[in-house]
View 1 (cartoon, rainbow, N blue to C red):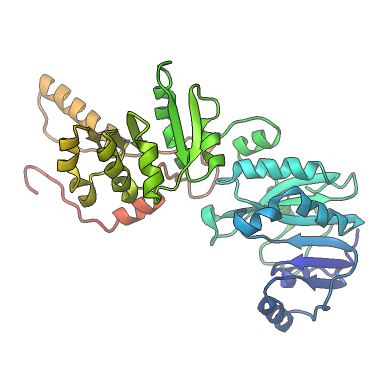
View 2: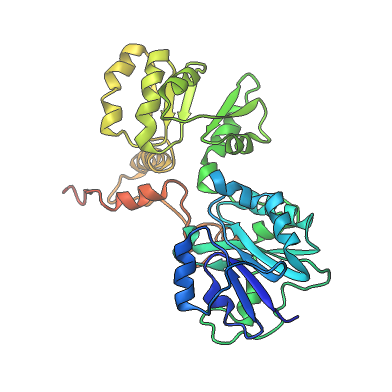
Amino acid sequence: MSLLQVVVMGVFVHEVLKHDTVQEVVLCDIDEAVIRVSKSTSHACPPSPPPRSAYTSATASNPVGPAESLFQKPYVQLLHNALTPWGHISTQGECMWIHLPLVHRLRKMTSQIFSEYEYAYTTIPTYPFGKIGFMVCAKAPGRDLLIPVREAQGTRYYNKEIHKSTFVFPEFVRALLEGKVLKPKFGKEALAPAAEYVVRDPFNELTIVCCTLRGAEALAEGLSSTTGISLNVNDAETLGKAVAEYDLTISLIPYTYHALVIKPAIKSKTHVVTMSYVSPTMRELDEEAKKAGIVVINEIGLDPGFDHLYVVKAIDEAHAKRGIKKFLSYCGGLPASECAGYPLGYKFSWSSRGVLLALLNSAAYLSEGKR
């Protein structure tokens, strides 16, 4: 198939024009400045799109707020209707590392509209996780989207092998796209072991709170006696009412917000558990917590937490046998190979911002009795 007319909703005009079969490109953008700059760096574009396009490339903002409609069925149907009978689209599909449920929904949705449909991804260093995905769809049946139909000239990134590789995924993504569930545990799912432990006791009831109801319900799915609710931690009144309804609050939000949870917990005499170090703001609430008769336990995650407990255990066992000459403690590990199919090979089990900020902290260590 030869492309005759292309509609671009975004800023890819210079890339589209590298294909010598393209005779006409129409750029559509909400920002007039984008069109003006594109005209100055590319071939002139007509002021209005043709009634039908052989190919449409659409970029969208993140799938929240006003841009959410660009990831829904009516919009994709409009793209379908704008194509010639042999037309194709490429539209944003977000990142498989942080938007996997959305990727799954997009693929299912496009399957209801297009004859051929595939999810693909490319590397973009400036994007979160260095990748962005997109849905590639064909209106006519029988088109093998995984196989390029021609060689592209003058490209610095794209080639036919890159084209094929954009449809090759880590196993957990491939399995989900085929209707199976094999997700790795991302940082936001750090609550899963704690949640599962709480509901082992049939007398316990658990509520998972997230900034979005969809996120809370997804995390609560599959857990007995568990519900999900949405809540803004900066809404002091709503937060206070929520904390007062429970015997224990486990705060897994960023450490800068723990004090906002502890304050209403003191008022309602609700115990609190966090995974974080005790910040100066939290320490200021110590006396009030004691007067309220509540327990606020901190530093019981992985680091700090498990590492400290196992250090004490190891030291006690060593002293019981023959004493200690030297002790070194390291925390961390390599991610499982099936969950690290990307060049960096590093996973944030907690706050990526916290990891970077920790580099700015002062530190001290003891060696042979000297500080």
